[in-house]
Amino acid sequence: MHPDWNQGADIQVPMHKIPNLPLGKVQQRHVVRIFFPRLYSAESPIDYLTQDKLALIYDRCLRPTMMEVVPESRDKWPTTYAAAYAHSRSCTGSLAFSSTDIPWYRLEQVATTLLAKVADLGPAFKDAYFGHELRGTKGATIHNGRDEDERRLAMDDLFEHVDVDSLDPGQWHVDVALTISVPGHVVTWRESSHHEILSHLMPAASALQISRLINNKTRFHLDRALQIKEFAGFRATTTKCAGAQSLSYVQAYCTEKNVTYSLNPGVFRRRQAKELLQKETEDRIIKDMDVMSNIFFECAGEGEVEGRDGCARLEVRVLLADAMNSLCTLPEELIQRWVVAIDRRVWW
Image (cartoon, rainbow, N blue to C red; front, top):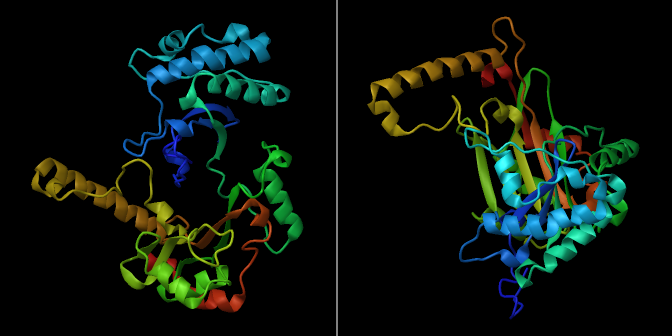
């Protein structure tokens, strides 16, 4: 994108930092967003739109588009953004949103009409585009990577709500993952295998290029397990690595982190040292430690519940055009060198 549209200098900006707004949803996990690249400012990067801009888009673009393209829904659209905001606001001050369905055969006309009206708002709103965010789909397309038919069906399921024929395979990326498991065990990665893993995924890259990537602290991050040196996964951004081809991101991790990971702070949250200085917070920490101990006890399979295993998971982000034939399987001898399986009772 261009930070200075008059001079036309190109820069790379993470997509989530471009000002955008969620426009609609397809079922529960597919969010359609509209992005406004000309509103981006490197000096003050803000990914959301201010209330005045939201009002401008609704009053002069979104509602008029729906009146024009889907006139049957004219009784469903509040007269102004201010009216819509007041209607969505609860007595506690939070927002509760409603939705309006749009027939699938009108979507293309809605899209073109809306973008045209947005562009008419002025230079700052030109070049807007749609983005599709599909979240929470991990595990929804489990398949046998060795079977081409299963890979094709999984791809079809993933893009069930997308018109694939209208996509440019060179502009879409897909995450492909492979999971290694041993019943009754936690399987994790060896740090000593990282170089070989990346070499296998990027055969065109030289050993020196792989080493430079691993030593680059901004593009390669080590994730240790149990504070043991040899047990570690990693995250690597490979877009600037020569020989990466369409591979842009690699992640190797152990799914045992699901036991403690949460988007919201809970009993496994990071603690502050000052919490030990007050009796109330110290007592709370002790109670939380009891809860954590019980969880680990159950994960080990002690007591009356079945334990919880952990898998070594390898994920790659590749172009859509290459997704069908990426990370289909791994040679057995490589798996033997790359991972270690620990009895879950020992691990937990």
